[in-house]
Length: 329
Image (cartoon, rainbow, N blue to C red; front, side, top):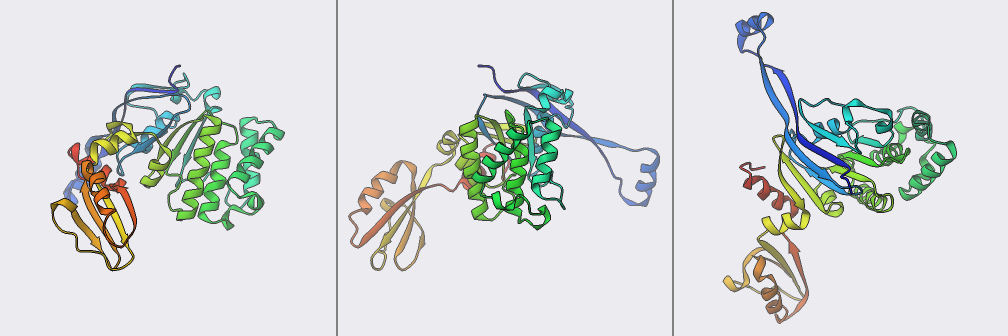
């Protein structure tokens, strides 16, 4: 099966005006402007299979959004090549545009003073979607996102979470085969984040939409993506399964013990490191390879009511990935 998305050496370089210091520098800049070249994306190679949902991680300025804009045809690259569903994105062919969708979490595509339903009708007309088919899609997606009663409410009166759900419906109205999601849960409360994640999980499973997801919320990536691409300074520094990242960069686990009475005083190398303690709860940090052994020993502790083994926090795992590439984040 041919990949849905392929990039080879994809680059985007911007010329940035170098501002001189002082009044003299400002005057010189009027007549002899000097520029620096900044590589926002610097040689990205990717292959993404049809129906695959890939997490795209990196700090601010790493090149994530620039990459998505090139793959959706909004930007021309400075070098390299890319194809999406066999099309060169920046040629912006009509058949290509009908098969992709780009959702930027910080950009609105809905008309602010109109109900979302009217923006959906505009999108339907732009994409030439049959009216009855569009209505079925809106009914289905709005039911999944629990916003059917809000379709006729002006967008400006919706909460941030409700607007994002409407944005998702607008992006999916024409049933794209490829979906680019840039920070779809940015600024949402915890409940809205969970609902959007559940929606995306079911959508990709049902529709087999090839999806690239960027997010600053690592819980989004952990919950949705089996494969993660990590980019920094415009270059891919890691590409593999989430399980592999955890395995390669996580060398410890944490064991949480809850007791009926006071927690015991566990000290010594045989118990690992005590990282938190209160009246009835104890949290131990232990080497990955010894987690099972220490857990078995803990089961025999007097008064133990509950035991829970937790992996290293995902934020710490990603921090280690960046540290291994020479950058602390």
